[in-house]
Image: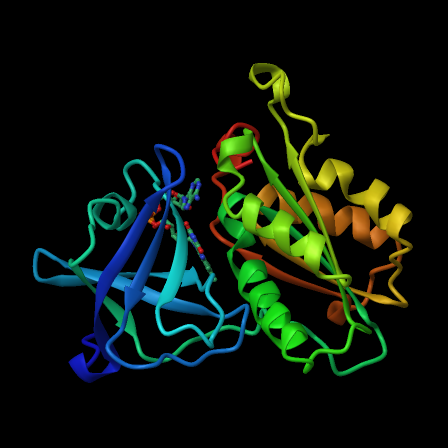
Length: 264
Ligand SMILES: Cc1cc2nc3c(=O)[nH]c(=O)nc-3n(C[C@H](O)[C@H](O)[C@H](O)COP(=O)(O)OP(=O)(O)OC[C@H]3O[C@@H](n4cnc5c(N)ncnc54)[C@H](O)[C@@H]3O)c2cc1C
């Protein structure tokens, strides 16, 4: 389908930060303010051999920021990420003007706890939510009745993008708990935090924090296997209604690559 040019921004990269060899953040300026609800995604694209190739990416930034930030993982052999990986400040990329998605905080009912579970780049929508709530809290617009509990899993410590920012925010914000966890601790003797995958520690923290289906909404983002496992654990805890759990699966795992694929 040929999508008209006016549906896209010709955005510019303003900043690139390499987190590891295959994880990086981009800040881009679309040319005008881009409004969205924290948790939503944008479609980023490039023209490759005369064809537009687009993929969805969750915003990391809060809607109040002028630039839009993304946390990206390089997928070797992928159609788009090897090209996105080459972008440097000043380079152009396409971004759809319309944000999309319903992976947003559910604050309209009596359940005041929000359990956010993520793997690697899956923390992106949660950073956007937390940055936005933190801005509101500093300006006295956010009452602390809503409480955020974030689990973030990765293989190694350096893959935990936004760890420093989230640790600082958790120290400052009385409504935020943040637990990073790594599944390959053996090369990191200095790691003081949790060990295991995000779904391995989910039950322990749900119990410790007193999170039940009656008082909590759950949100799962990133690796498909984490999402499947976390859903099963939450279902055993009583999260059985369709509305109890929101999920954003970043890709479909080929069956045989399930156990060993990247991003956990
Ligand atoms: C709503 C939504 C939001 C997303 N947000 C982000 C985000 O914030 N950051 C981000 O990095 N990605 C995000 N993704 C994934 C992103 O859209 C692309 O799928 C990913 O960047 C790969 O694109 P590609 O064209 O390079 O690979 P493709 O050519 O599309 O895929 C090649 C193969 O790799 C598999 N694959 C795709 N991603 C991964 C991965 N991470 N690890 C292992 N295998 C993978 C695919 O299933 C496919 O089999 C999101 C996906 C969705 C649906």
